[in-house]
Image (cartoon, rainbow, N blue to C red; front, top):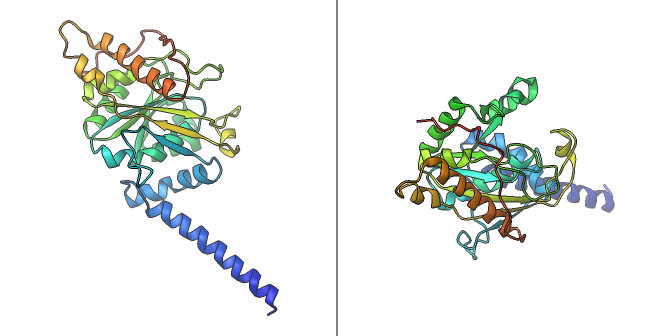
Length: 269
């Protein structure tokens, strides 16, 4: 074996060792995942870090500057509703990076009817719901999971934003779930997400993504106890507050929040 061949072999071994070390870190690294969940989410971590180069920025209240980065589960052992803007079909993956444990997303039931996509959604334990927002069963399921100490993920815009504006009209369903479950809302803002004509096309587009995570907001849990305030009025103000907080955190001016309509579930027990 010549010296050049030996050098190539050593370089290949080092590359493989580095790749194995990286995969091992992602598989057994931070987060409160079960072993099954670690294998399930491994592709999410690898693709998000290598192809999309996701950078997570935490609110100052979260950050331990010696560690530089915290998972939500390091500070939150209870349930929460994670809300984010929605510009890409890959957005749940970016939120998952900062969650540190399984996030149960509410997803329109239409996708569950597709053979491959439906199977993936079931494996991730997502919650099927009607796009209209009027789905008592799915809302009760989300409330139950949050009460059990789980994370539930929701996009208040309800659909992918292709308008070029920071936010489309929103719905207060996430705040209603938080009120009924008595858990805080965590505002998250995503920038630079890959966009494609289909839900799969974004998967193969390189990007530099910034995920801004705010501290848990429990304003609504305090406001609902005020005399004369209904769940409906509190939910609308609460979701408007947290989404505006996320927009401002991204460096934009305070936005004017508008609602898509009042077709959302109130009678969820």
